[in-house]
Amino acid sequence: MHSQINFGYPWYLSWGHLLLALPFALAAWRLRNRWVRAVCLVVVLWALSAWAVLQVGLGVQRRAVLPTARFLASGSGRVLDLGAGTGRSALMVLEARPRATLVALDEFGRSFEMHFGKSAEHLLLENLKAAGVASRVTVEKADMRKIPFGDGSFDAIVSAYAIDHLRRSGAEETLREAYRVLKPGGEFLFIVTNGDFWLRYMAGPLLVHNRMRGMEDWRPILTGPGFQVAEEGNSPGTLFVLLRKPAMAP
Ligand SMILES: C[S@@+](CC[C@H](N)C(=O)[O-])C[C@H]1O[C@@H](n2cnc3c(N)ncnc32)[C@H](O)[C@@H]1O
Image 1 (tube, rainbow, N blue to C red):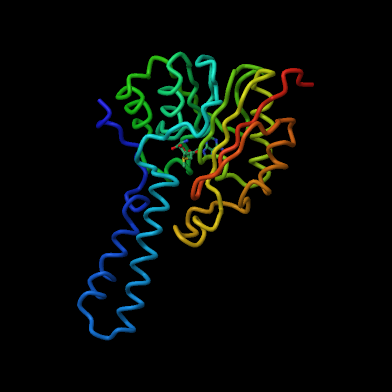
Image 2 (cartoon, rainbow, N blue to C red):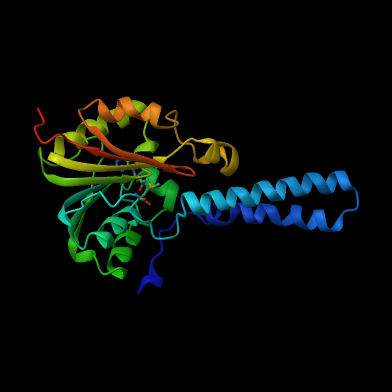
């Protein structure tokens, strides 16, 4: 059942660095000049490390694992996925929380096409079906900066590698909207690429989407609407923050 899942990310995110390493490895093996060989070996080492960083930190073709067991620890509730894409973040939540339901919201516009190509919308439903969770999901086509749901509609929100594609003002709007549609006491699992050393210098700047580099840049955007930071953590290239809307929210 699981083998049918295809998140549709471009192949070069998973294999590009290995492909780059190949000619340099061949050159290092065949050429006699030791300086040229040394340079080739440095490139090979960099490419292999970058590949490892992307595999460990993002691993976009693999199933994602919840970065914290504290998210929706009750195991049930109505969850909103902001920028659901082809379902990787939705599956992460639905498989770890088998009594939860989820609204997969995505604009399915230019950004979607840039990541997954034209006509890839079918991948979302196919992945949910292949994982046996489709009956717990509804799909909503919308802009996450203007969430088309009423105040306090959700017990929890998840968003992975989506809000970092917005400009700062768009991210601020989205966080305000997320705060509005979350119930008091609700949680928001916020996951973005982290413009840390690993992503910028090892894996390549292509994946650093905006000026927000790490927690210090994100903190005012996250706490501005009133969220409290319950937990935060990193893996190479990824930042996650568990946010909580106070139970006695104003
Ligand atoms: C890198 S993908 C992440 C998909 C998924 N969350 C995952 O973890 O694989 C970013 C997604 O955000 C969506 N997106 C970007 N801007 C958006 C917006 N303003 N409103 C709704 N979705 C948006 C894109 O369409 C794309 O599907």
